[in-house]
Each structure stands twice: as structure tokens, then as C-alpha cells.
Image 1 (cartoon, one colour):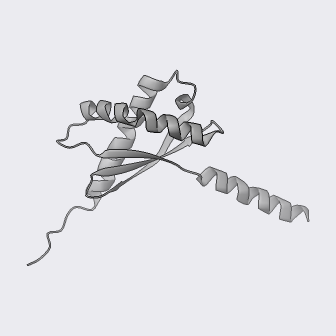
Image 2 (cartoon, one colour):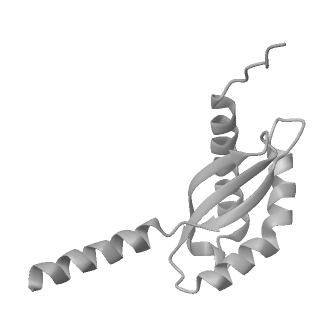
Image 3 (cartoon, helix red, strand yellow):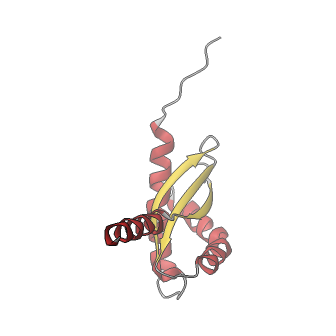
Length: 118
């Protein structure tokens, strides 16, 4: 018995669609929120047979723990709004994770600059 092959791009398409819709939801509903106003979604990955989507964000706010807590607090509401905007039978669970790529790049730049000075 052969295992049925699935379209591997489907997960990427779903994740991208979820990222776009959640970004719109955050913009529409939480633009005036002091904590969530500076959040930008920078990536999305689907896992678990399209049941889960991890959304990676970057924030201008320096207190990432507070931003993460606030995102965790609004996740249920965001997912409810996502269900209304998606044209699918099932809406994936979403989880927000901080993307520290820019912070790591800044640390590398600082290290390189300190080597040049020596």
C-alpha cells in the first residue's frame, strides 16, 4: 500500500494566508493598543497537518514579555475573527512567537564593529 502524497505547498499557502489575515486583524482591531500597535508579523509556519500555525512577530516595544503576554491574551479573539475571514472548514490553532533575527543581526554587527576598532 502506497502512502498518498500530499501537496507540500499547501501548508505554506495556509500559513501565508493566516499570516496575512491575522496581520489585518491586528491592524483593524488593535491599532490603538499601546502594546500591539507596534507588532509586525514577519513569518508563518504550519505544522501538525495544517492544524497549527506559528506566527513569528517583531515588535518595536522593548518589553517582549509584555508583548507576548498581550498576544497570548488576544489569541482566542483573533482566532475567532480569523474563522470569520477564512473560507475553510477548519481554522488552525495559532501561536505567536517572537522573531529575534533582527536582534541577533544587530549583535553580530556590534561584534564586527568592535573587531574593526581593535
